[in-house]
Image 1: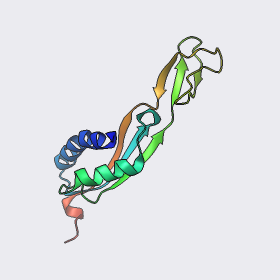
Image 2 (image 1 turned 30 degrees about the vertical axis):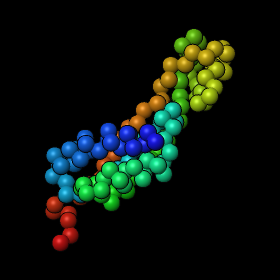
Image 3 (image 1 turned 30 degrees about the horizontal axis):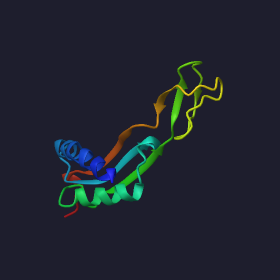
Image 4 (image 1 turned 45 degrees about the horizontal axis):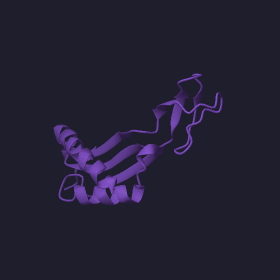
Length: 120
């Protein structure tokens, strides 16, 4: 389950950034995961809950958005949407894409609670 390693790599900088801003709690985290990462959202959420336990991210809602695959043919320069198992350019028939989207994991947003927002 590579979702656990994704969360293990995400959590330290996420917590550090929130604490640098004086956050007392992380409320929501939004990730965009490229289709090539083959992330299973439920498994990612389960891993997030486990790793966040005992931190200011405990109880935070994780939102996962999938980013579609996109590319540009290195041969004819046409932009197109290859599929995960078919990279053939619809224009020239070659399978030589330069992938421009769909491979990364991006932290899109973090919603935090600051001390003056906390309810006693």
